[in-house]
Length: 205
Image 1: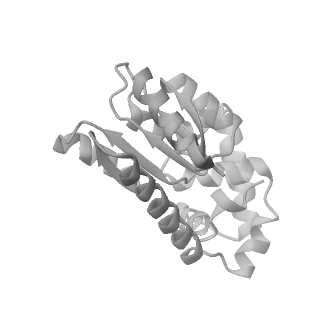
Image 2: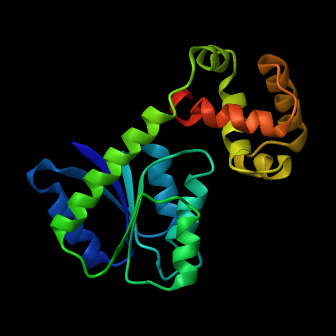
């Protein structure tokens, strides 16, 4: 059975979706109603997919949540929202969601979208299969070094990596130096390319 994180602040909609998708054991649904609960649930559980409303009636919206999660993880995302504003859609597109559904919608449409998103994600993973050489090099990295590479691949600078992982900038630089030695790479571009082609979000411990 699928395990899905649903981010929705409207209780009636959240409960209706939870009951509907749980029916016939289509999926187990965990519900988060704000940024803090969404991040906490995501860190605690392994999910196959995220369904997120965009407007959460708080300082941080659904896109903010997905941006945070995407710093260290790649997971299929389906945005579920009543908004079709061009600026909002553009923000959402930058997080590379697998689908974007406008309310109102029907359950069959949502189920079909979920299945298609998971299928496309599987194809994406297969197309990004790392080489045996890269896989061997990844095994030489520590868990922290892998984490730093993943965040680095999202375009973060050392100061931002330090803040994301709650470590010092000096520690980040030391790890980057060790990573360069282990992988025999020099430039940031080479490190980012290695992280992407090696699918560290899949290979990490």
